[in-house]
Length: 348
Image (cartoon, rainbow, N blue to C red):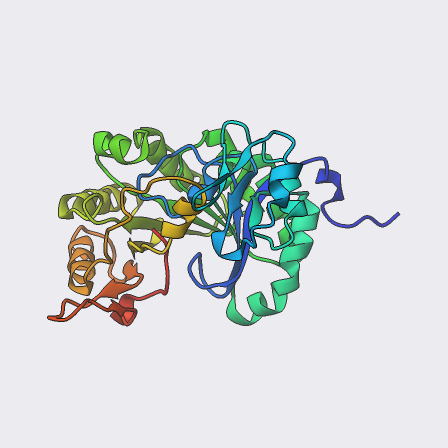
């Protein structure tokens, strides 16, 4: 009897926040990025706050609301109420059941988090295979922290490879080594975030020390030296104004990479801060300490890239990406023309 690939894993369930197609930010070529729910870190600059909770969440999009108040009547937990600016969601009461989102006629209420099986998700991703083949792209599992759903991601990657789709894991490294060890045999590329080299500053910025992260990175190095897959390792560092944008941080990360991973890392990307997630915090009823922060000037990114290049890594490994601003006498303007190092849109 013929069975579809991946069916033996359909008892596994994964909670996916979003499927983003035609991405150029999360690995080579055109990619479909799967954002998984759940993250162990609490980065103060987080650009995907809706991905932190491992559970489905409801958000209200005010621009779509027609004021019908249907949601107030159907919520089984009485978690919704009307405030001066629209619908209020009591996060302590809301269970993320999605009843209100299904009944909302204008889609003003959205459920963040959908349950998939590995084979269902692989079949959805395989719809983009023609783009992957033409651009040498593939699928990237991101988040949140995809490794927190490691058995699902491993089965999903296996199902993707059976369909000829290249796979990449985007990870913060803040997870058990056993989670990464389960995924690595099925990944072609690892995108590993190193945000801050100082362990106490890392704890202040993210809620946790970086000790396990750096230990896991060295273990990824050892795995790659001993196995044929993953073939490629990229490091990504978010450059955040007033936080990780310090020269000593870039120097420290660069020296760590040169000393421990010089023969393994093929790309180190400095990802310029962006402020496009303000509305996400508003919709979730959260404050964001970087709400008023501006884009970084282009010359700051250029200087930090030069600092990174001087830390002992091979020539051509360091890149930077993201929108910046020009320092002008008039109001600053976004500048996407970031020169030869630009890889558009690497999120911080």
